[in-house]
Length: 259
Ligand SMILES: Nc1ncnc2c1ncn2[C@@H]1O[C@H](COP(=O)(O)OP(=O)(O)OP(=O)(O)O)[C@@H](O)[C@H]1O
Ligand SMILES: [Mg+2]
Image 1 (cartoon, helix red, strand yellow):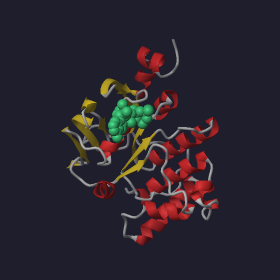
Image 2 (tube, protein in one colour; image 1 turned 120 degrees about the vertical axis):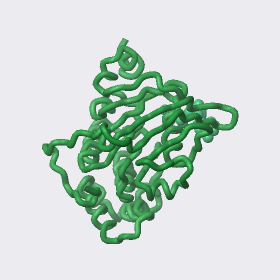
Image 3 (cartoon, protein in one colour; image 1 turned 45 degrees about the horizontal axis):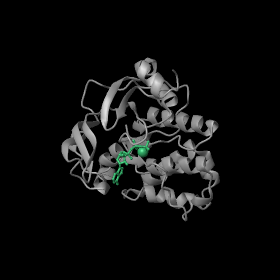
Image 4 (cartoon, helix red, strand yellow; image 1 turned 90 degrees about the vertical axis):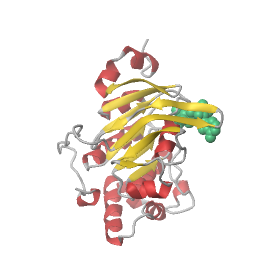
């Protein structure tokens, strides 16, 4: 089933359980990454299975965005490998990575502020040639975010932060990704928008897209994720089912503000 086979999914529709018996969709093998003389990822290993929502937690400077950049081919591992659906990702160009089925919702959104909402969405589909499915995906984005449909001729830079986040997610979906990677989707949003964005992330996942997301808001991230990783100074210090992480003393102390 591809994303374009599905339109609106009702909220009460049961979720298909992720399949962890077969091949991982994303697999980091002992990845080291450096900026110049400074090592920022140390033998990092993440596994994401098809259909999962996986959360990556960690405080400022832990290496979360670097992880996302490594997936997109913007930062290259100095050693170790990254596989996506059985292919080596870490030797591919960024456009090829998008074409292979990975789409980023970057930190700080990075929408095209001077373009309209609709043109931003069209840009998201630039790797695609099949105009028919592009139109279908645009309708799907508008179903997920009716606000974007209302505002489709608005210049994107004049939209509110929450609306821009919706647009960033919508634009990523326009490449019909198998894997959506998100860097701090709740950043700067009011509680009501955070809730809306996370509801939408769950809907997108139910429609068949695997999700790997970075979040500072550990509580909400772990409430929708299947599993999580905690990164500290470039090393994975904790990993496991989201519910277990939520109960762990370390996460409660460091990320949920409990003493
Ligand atoms: N282009 C760069 N050149 C040099 N150092 C960098 C560069 N980008 C990031 N770093 C450093 O690498 C480390 C990890 O940064 P990264 O952006 O991955 O952290 P993060 O976990 O996303 O943090 P935050 O929660 O603040 O977004 C930090 O110490 C940062 O200063
Ligand atoms: Mg970051």
